[in-house]
Each structure stands twice: as structure tokens, then as C-alpha cells.
Length: 74
Image (tube, rainbow, N blue to C red; front, top):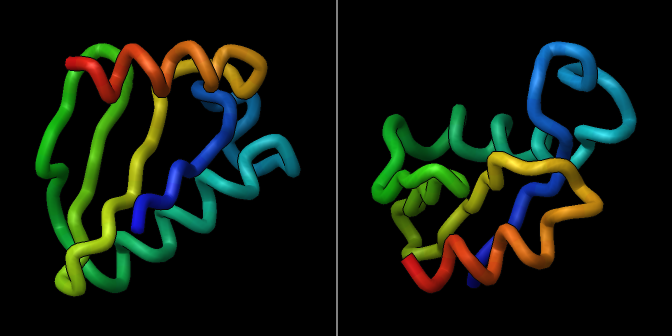
């Protein structure tokens, strides 16, 4: 299972409704893991103890489809 935690990067959106997915993902990894398994310019992947993955993208929500495709190819 892969969770893609959508949200907008930067402090401007940090605690807004635009970042609900990112906030949820941060809560999950804060409870279950400590460091990213994989990281590149498009985002980070954290792997949970049950094998599930949590993905954070380094792009705005309206660019997330293209960003996720590029991230998965790398």
C-alpha cells in the first residue's frame, strides 16, 4: 500500500486545509518511523514497519500527478 500525502510545499501552506494529506502523513511517520528510505528532488518515501509506504511530493497539488510519475521513475 502506498499513501501519497498531497499538499503544498512551504511555510505559507504549512497548517492550512491545502495540506491535510501532508499533515496526516507527518502524523503517521511520526508514530511509526524515523527516516526516509528514498529521497530525490521530487520527494521522499518513508517505509512503515508493515511494509506500507508514505510518499511526500515536493510540488504543489496541481502538479502532483506529473511529479508523482517522475518520482516513481527515478
